Amino acid sequence: MAAVLKATGPDFNRTLVLAAEQNLLNDFEREERVKEYRRKLGIADWNYEHTDNHEAWRAGRDEFTKLYELQAEVDPDGEIWHSVAPAGFAVPQPRIVINLATKGVL
Image (cartoon, rainbow, N blue to C red; front, top):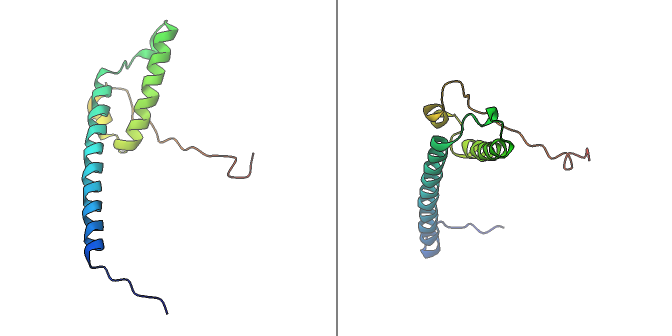
């Protein structure tokens, strides 16, 4: 017969406190990520694709690659993106990464 675990005692309370502390930390980290995302959107070179300078184009592409990753993490509905982006810059569509090796294809 399996033993019934009781959700009481000092270990249970300690676990709740640790979980609450982790949630606060996660909330703080998320706020910091959102601030970073907003700042980067505000200074982004939205017209990098139209430059003749290859280095500037590459820097812009790399910058937007990071912005797309942040957008997927902290702004999945695109609300922040729309509030900062110039007209005509749609929220990037979600990118799905498929590992073909785990699917038995490779």
